[in-house]
Figure 1 (cartoon, rainbow, N blue to C red):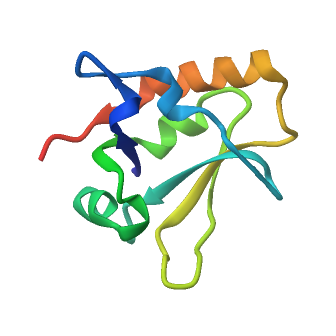
Figure 2 (figure 1 turned 90 degrees about the horizontal axis):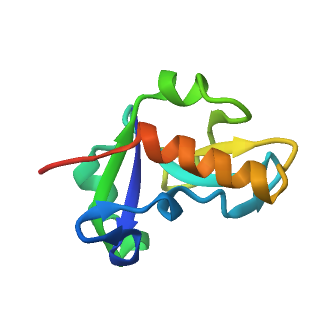
Length: 115
């Protein structure tokens, strides 16, 4: 399971928007979406993390479901002081149409965590 912190702008009428799962970072493994691995973090910790100061909710997805999607991979990318950090990434970086498809696929597998 991985968690993704969500902001107010990721919602419309209480529903998560697909844009919440846009591959945004250019990293060594292509375009990526930062997530947190549940082996090292809980949903509550993801929400409360200082670097997520604008977060208002958390979404979760099963890694097996993500790995079953076309064009994406999941990798653990720990940082100093942030062992849970992971990426959902597409490598090589997909074109705009493929990124939209990936975003929509991720939107279907992530669910809002209720506290």
